[in-house]
Amino acid sequence: MCLGIPGRVLEIHDQAGLRVATVDFGGVRREACLAYTPEADVGTYVVVHVGFAITTVDEAEAQRTLAVLRAMADAVEGELGEPLPEAGAERP
Image (tube, rainbow, N blue to C red; front, side, top):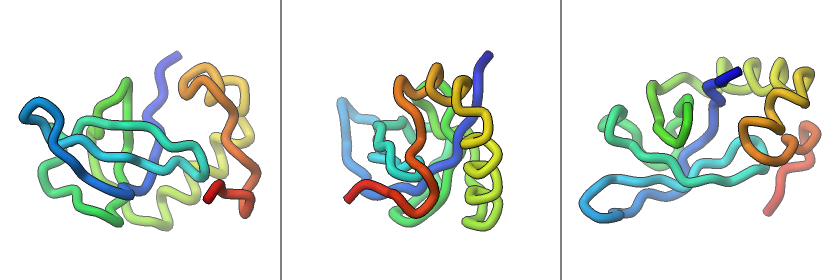
């Protein structure tokens, strides 16, 4: 199963000529390429699939989706390599 998981862009940097972001998925942080979402900026919520931000979403939709994904913990852990923290338990 492949999932697109929403997260908030924390920072953006250049990596070998590509815009790459550190994205926070409710406490789990990963790098994602922003080549397909040139409009993304710090604070923007993006949906990430296999390391690429494929679209932007608003915060409310991102939070709803993360709540559903927390209920599907095994699928999320398989995609991110670790489970999402419980709501309100975001990492610093």
